[in-house]
Length: 114
Length: 115
Image 1 (tube, helix red, strand yellow):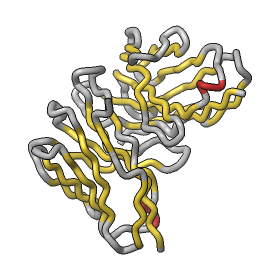
Image 2 (cartoon, chains in turn yellow, orange):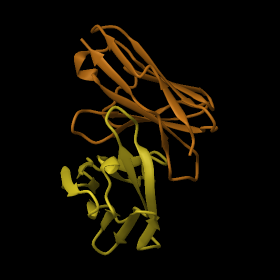
Image 3 (cartoon, chains in turn green, cyan):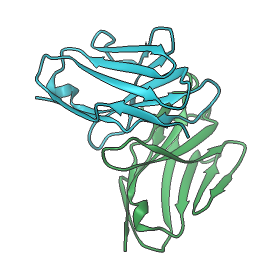
Image 4 (tube, one colour):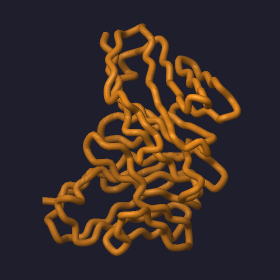
């Protein structure tokens, strides 16, 4: 049972436009969410996070929105750049399991075309 | 963020051999380290959690006798894949965290190919 879901395996966007990556979760106990960016054959790098006490967190071109009632979060990248092309993972800490364990979605591959 | 290294970055071995992967936290005292693996087109899946000085906690379905984890110091954790088989071929990634923090710092990963 996937507790963190990214239903779009891929997304293609034109350079300069907005990229919107979506993530849904099923566990209402999750109270913190993270987005990681991953290039091929490299480890994930932290991008941005949001606590459940907020509904928005912004860092430069990256903004994460959280809708707790819908158990949905999204990552907005604007404007999108070719260097943003990577796989983006949504994750949430699973406190009920191993402390600090992150549960990841399957990822969405973003391709930004020049 | 913290810098985490892994060695080797890739390894090819024959079926039945054992492979050791090192994960080092270069500038961070990692009381907790996590080992993940990622199969093609799949998510990162947690294999085990190790706390410095104590036994690792394995996730369901992960054989502790096959994937030996040692976290003897605050800067080093090792994962040994014993008697590797082709189905163990995967991308193994470690991460470091600290109690009370949600964020983890990931290593660059190790690509294991078992022939």
